[in-house]
Image 1 (cartoon, rainbow, N blue to C red):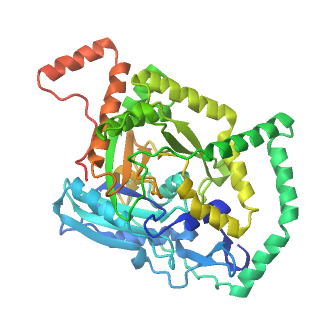
Image 2 (cartoon, helix red, strand yellow):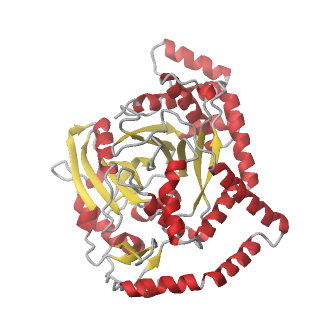
Image 3 (cartoon, rainbow, N blue to C red):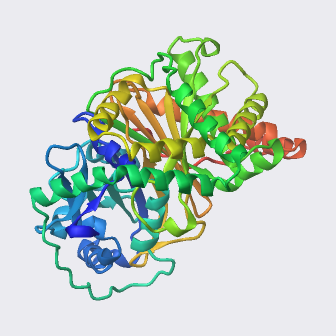
Length: 494
């Protein structure tokens, strides 16, 4: 960390440059906990204890005490320590009207998540929400995308939460902010960086060749993957009811599925867990377009699926180490089994083509680009989005975790929206659950609840195909005597 600051990568910088007042680019989540030992004698939640715990752990995530500063005469941002950092600003305590429902929590989550973070302070907030029915409480957290991607967000969960239901906090480590660099220091360091670019570029090419195992075939495949990715990104997304200019307000909904049932479908019908997820999304999008009087078979529909390129030695580090696949959903196919087969074939081809590696090559090249070009590119990319929808699926811990003894029950993630993307779908698996979070423009999707029901219906279609005939007969008999079928846990739409 030279001279008291850290430079952002080109990818991290792009999330700052792409942000607009009506499209804040923070990732977020609503986590629901059992009250447990955090319940106070009055029936509230001991937020002070949560703050003490966070304060004791902040030395492990120094970025949470840093803010953005900009290099003079440049579009390049850097991290510097926030000399006025105070935890009370970032951790807020609020309540739903008792007994608060999940629907009310969704509406509060949407209202908090749609508000931009203050760029003059560290770019994160956490709201502790008490009053939720069923002896539960929630946290609503948001962190700017320039700080974390999905995988580093899971690593962050493991720092702030624990695997044991232990109660108690350690002593906070002493923290002294580093002196902020002067504008002249920042400018001079940037000029030196640019002067060194030619040598660093040569060294980067050498590393690129070494990582490619010094074989022409591997180098060629990486270059070809990058070229294919660029060519695909030049194809503009089709215009659908989901792809219109977005406003500043949001709706947030969620769905909780049994992860074991998803795995049963995968074992019976083939493909990966993520292939099954994309097949479910295909069925939901078909239903949505039909409700909007659009023929799905006539609509090319592309999904962006972020892919982590984080290496094992980068685990626990903040920042973005992510690439992306683009996948055409088979909306022209009505058979879910055939949808899954086509999606699986596409993802298998993407794995073999190295498109994720190609995207990481392009990201590395962006480090050498002009800061002005980087800014212009980031600010105009949303006008030429090559995809209709983002679906990001992050694996989380498959065991219970706790915050000061309070067990985490569910965690519903949020992926931010950009211009012309009216819906984003984020998923996280946790302790046998597959938790879906749906972030939508308030006006474009007043029927977001119907879209979520479409997800449930598409899941049921796949499960019927995967179930053995004996099991289907047993379910039919159960339904006859008035017992509900295996449930998908879902709260009312917001």
